[in-house]
Structure formats: structure tokens, C-alpha cells
Amino acid sequence: MIDLEKIDITNFLPHRKPFLMVDKVLSLGDKHVTTSFYINKESVFVQNNIFVEAGLVEFAAQTCSSIVGKSYFDDDDIEGKGTKLIGFISTIKEVEVFSCPDIESTIIAKAKLISRYDTDEFCICTLQCNIYKGVKELLSCQMNLFIQEVK
Image (cartoon, rainbow, N blue to C red; front, side, top):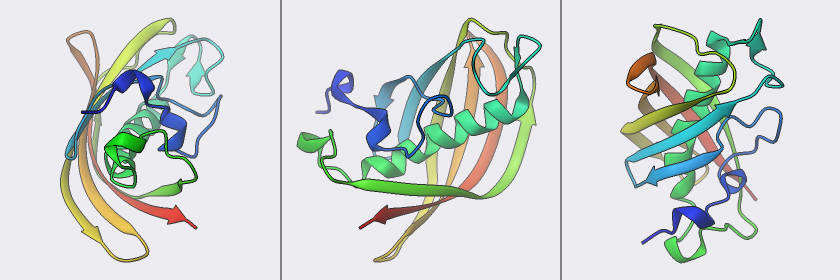
């Protein structure tokens, strides 16, 4: 079983502050992930004290890539010593933005893996993601990601 407190999300994602949009991994499995992000006023996606649509999409993409990123690590080596990953959004199939949250709030993303195609060199996957502030849904999207281990 994975100790979620030991997960350093920067092992799964190439992003760093101020572009890193995942603070904590709340749950993680082979086909699902739940993450959180606290929006502060210094976020690159804040305009007029609102976290804008592009920030929600980026938070969704980073959350989704955590599911696939996990597969490059053993459960007993979740710290990812030496493993580096790179990923790209290849397609956004559907996106609906219902509302944008204010600064100084925490948002939660819940993603699930729909399909995955692996080769020896890369992975392409389709994922569904929903973002919430409390019980209010902010975004729903489906996207394809391209993930590759950098050797």
C-alpha cells in the first residue's frame, strides 16, 4: 500500500513552482487519482483574484498525468529515485467550465483512466477529470495525454 504522505508529486510531474498545480495526492490507484491545490494570489493563472479557465485545465492535466506517472514507479519506491517523466496534452476532447474559483480556496480534482496504449517508448492515454470546490463542480473534461520516461 502506498503511503500518500511520502509521495513527492514532483517525481510524477516535470512542473515546478509557480507552474506546479498539485499540492497533495489524496488518493491514488492504477486507474484513479484525487488531488488538491490551494490557489494563492501568486498563481500564474490568477487574474483579478480569480483562478481562470486555463488554470483549471492545467490542474486537470497534471492530476490526470499522475495516474500514468505512478505506473513508472514501484509501490515500495514511490520516491522515484532517478526516474524522470515528461508529458503533453495531445488532445482535449471535451471541456466544460461551470465556474472559476476565487483565490485562497482549495480545489479538488478527481480523475479516472478511460483507456491506455503503451509502447516501449511512450504511453498515450485518455482520461476523464472533474474539478470541485466543495460540492460545486467547476470543470469537467476528457483529454488525451502523451507520457514518456526520459532516459
